Image (tube, rainbow over all chains, first blue to last red; front, side):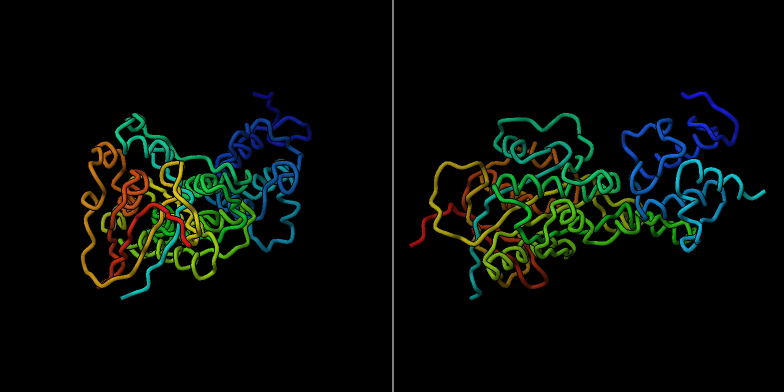
Length: 99
Length: 285
């Protein structure tokens, strides 16, 4: 298990929030053989990197809605940025969680 | 008198949790082996890319396993084969999930499961995995699904003068629908059928190189499962298979596995049966 830093981090080590998001990604997308701790925080989630696609984005949005109550809309202009990496996704979710 | 439709069975594939391939099924049928003691979980569909593989539900996994093995046995490239996929219920687990979610919170419906819910999901994964662009058909006909799919595959093979892959499979039916339309466990079978050519009898793997002469005939009663099969079938063969809707395929497969010749009937729809003579392939002309 990597050393954890604070909720948000600029390092290559997963924060607590990022690790939680990594576990959600692996579980909800059935990523066989992928260790959540191995997902690099700033690596691309889609295309290269984990190789996720648009159906995965929809599935992730659904799981995030159920888990965190954060709605990720398919027509959001910022989706490319929000879903860019584990770090960007975790940051977006944790700054938009209902109080 | 209806037309007699003649095809050769050039490959067979089979998968069930305790009879995980056709060779095992044949050996158990012949009394040479026992079914596997421990039921296997679903096979991993090796022909799929990782993205499709992790999304494929049980129905797709077992259908693709049987289909792949049948093509191997026939020695044909899946890319060249039109296909017919027959499944009584479609994916009951997904339908149960969708119904429950739509009833409780329709906005939380999984897009992955939704896109896997269509009846031609297995046909779609198969054509994606193999790169096949030949026609594919997905059908159901309730308790007559296997016979209807077999007739469709035979007609396509003869009409288009091409080998055709026929895949028949069912998984379990959970939830309220399963109470009125039950199915347990998993069974998948697959045949490659091709127009009869001048093949002679000879040494061949079990079930390969048999001729099916099929016709649609008036009739209301198909023979029950256990009585249509030739000779003495070990109890273990039927007992090793779950109470699954695709037990419909077992009588024909028992014929193919046992090397016996004979005639069987399968209910096709109200008032009709599919009558099939199973024979050795003989040289024509």
